[in-house]
Amino acid sequence: MAGLVPAIHAVQPGAMRGGWIYIMTNRPNGTLYIGVTSDLTRRTFEHREGLYAGFTKRYSLKRLVFMERYEDIRDAIQRERTMKHWPRAWKVRLILDLNPDWRDLYDDLI
Image (cartoon, rainbow, N blue to C red; front, side, top):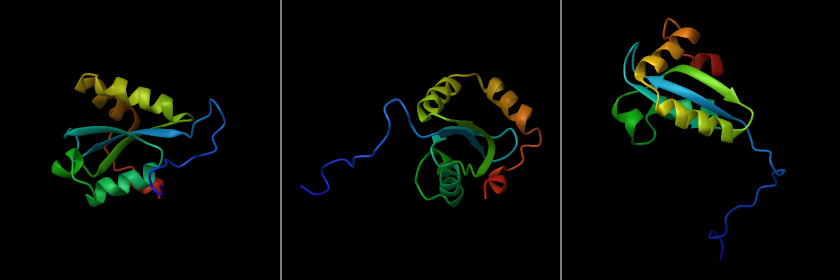
């Protein structure tokens, strides 16, 4: 039954690949999107090019304004879930602390 069996990956018990939390926007103080990924460069490119239908494409969220690296993807996932429940003011403050000019950080990745 080719194609029905999930791929098996050699991962040491308790060790997971790292991950990123990121925030996309369309302009300073604009609409915010918080995401998590193991490949920030690829995922940001997908958002910028509008490759997939969804929230970021609908609102033209193409500017990467915040990123945070984690050694374990599970920690990144937990942080994303937590941040999604934060008030908007907390998210904006987080961006302003790292990136007060709301500069697009995508160029720093490539």
